[in-house]
Amino acid sequence: MVERRVYDTGKQIHFVTFSCYKRRKHLQHDQAKRIVIGTMGSRLAQHQGLCLGFVIMPEHVHALIWFPETWQLSPFMNKWKELTSKSLKTVLPQSFRSDWSQIDSTERIGQTRDYGFNIWSRAKVEDKLDGGHMNPVPAGMVERARDWPWSSARWYLEQKSVGLPIRWWPRVEADNEFTTNV
Image 1 (cartoon, one colour):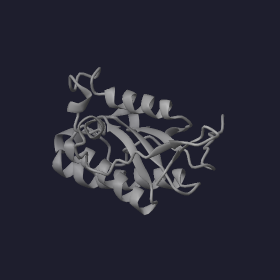
Image 2 (spheres, helix red, strand yellow; image 1 turned 120 degrees about the horizontal axis):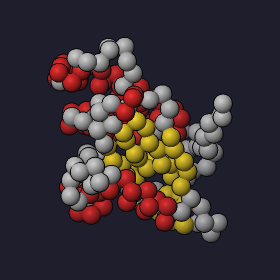
Image 3 (spheres, one colour; image 1 turned 90 degrees about the vertical axis):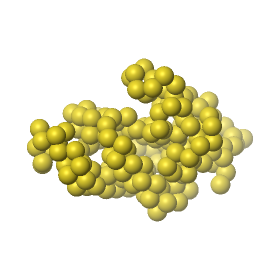
């Protein structure tokens, strides 16, 4: 088995993604998406982290995040997913019984693993933001990325609130490492 490598020794931006268990659409309801956003915001605040962008789809999440200290990514992701899952398991079965009646109550909400990598350039940040923001369009959920209320696209295109602060203060260092100037 290949051991997963997490590169969190520098202060690069991290692109992260995670999926619901068995690609179930646990995040299809607005209430579920609000929980994901709220938990992400509170966890980032605890870590003094920043969100550069995100998109929440019915069965997966993408986010671009940055921390002022090293070795924050794994603790952040573990707690974000744990707290989100606990909230979803409490709220959604009560609010959306028909969706949850077919699911075993012991089943996980999210996949155990999350996936991520460091971003080293502004071009790659913009590529990941654009790609993430476009997810709802080919999925047939909206015609334009800015119309999906569960992403940071509206913040970038129209400077409209998206449920948590989006920060974008990039500067390129002499060694071409992408960092955030807070």
